[in-house]
Length: 132
Image (cartoon, rainbow, N blue to C red; front, side, top):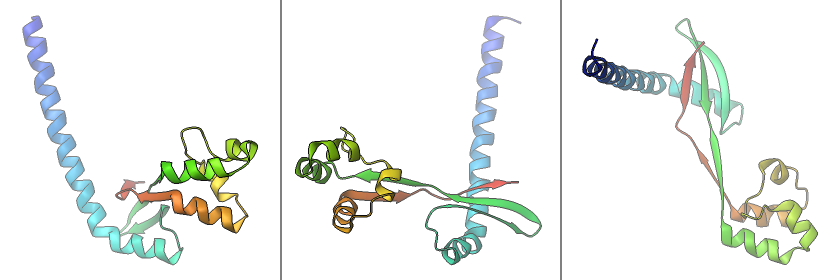
């Protein structure tokens, strides 16, 4: 085979892969739409806004997952960091003005927790699903 033929086969293969990937994304979205009521209810029953649950619908075992991402208000965290003693501020808040979720979750001081919550925003992902 010539280089031109190999390149043409590679281009054609990539095009077929892209088409199949698009088909797969549409099918996965359709599946998510069809089972979302069942899994969303199960998440709500478990008082979960994010995470995963596994279940079986029509004989098909699936895992429903909703991811959470967290963003922090930089101005509010900076103001809080500046108001705290330096050793506390540096342990609690990263220099990029972000707070690790494990540190945030471990806080017991209600005033500090409220101030942190004011600077914190969470975002849930679009649900994904895996066939098991």
